[in-house]
Image (tube, rainbow, N blue to C red):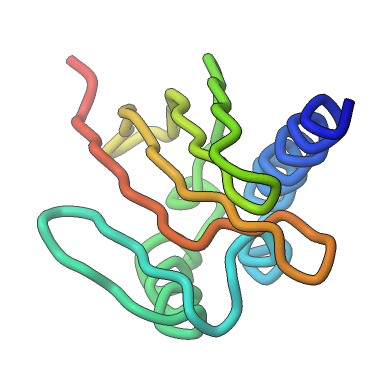
Length: 129
């Protein structure tokens, strides 16, 4: 049952990313992304490469814990596409005093060197009412 093990491994990557974000460890959060060639799509723009994505997170969320907020991924759905590829769709919520966010992540997961990473991350977000 390799797919079961792969799904568990993918869920662990996402849980580890959530925990890293919530403790303010942006490098730990970024460990879930392909390095150096992740593609990140958000706000109608494409951001390429791991370092630029890390820089974006630090600039936008790293100034203080209340700016970082508390991140939660939920309703995680995984579809195995191949032994080394999976599609992940999940809801997320970023709770913080100002500019809270929620939305959907669509991710292309790739297995590289025996480890699952996010190769493509697409975020569709909105500010909750």
